[in-house]
Image (cartoon, rainbow, N blue to C red; front, top):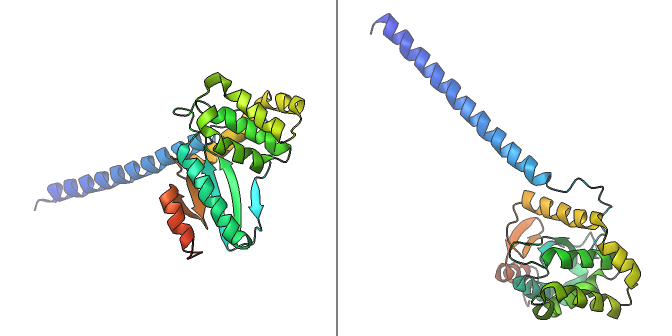
Amino acid sequence: MPRGRLDGEVEMKRQKEVVTVFIILALFGVIGVVRWVKTTRVPALKAPPAVKKILGDPGAPVKIVEYSDFQCSACAKGHGILKEFLTKASDKTFLEFRYFPIEEIHPQAVRSAIYAECAAREGQFWAFQDLLFSGQSQWGQGGADAETYFKAYANSLKVDLERLDACVKDDTVEAVIARDTAEARFRGVSATPTFFVNGKMVVGTTALREELGRFLPVF
């Protein structure tokens, strides 16, 4: 083979390698940008530290992180499964709740989460959550009237309504919810309910019951 032709083929091979490396680096760059966007979607507000919504001992062998939407019917079912499991294995379980409202299909999802976060600041998150899920079929169809239900739930729990009203008007409360949502998307969450059981992603209620059954055979 002529020397010039050989040199040309070597040069072409080198150019292809350079292009391949460039494409790979560009791909990683795009992935990095996407992740950056996902983690910087939180509004440019000074969000206060979120009230921890946790149950159980952090050292428990079963650790569950729940991402939920209060207007999601499957989330209400998942809530029931978790309550059942906690009743039977409270000494083995650590649960942490985080917000993931999908406002595109649940118009009251963010607003209900805001009220829940404000109830949390009054030490009533878990009881308020119970009321949201049990009354979902009423307030979920109420449109603008949904807030009447939220206030009634808070009142039934003896939450100070003046403080509640001031809290729900505070824009930084929504920033707390947005922060949870951004974190969820970064972790790959795209549907509700989604759970992380000892770090394993579990999507949906059927999968949740099956996964929890590994730790409690009679469940």
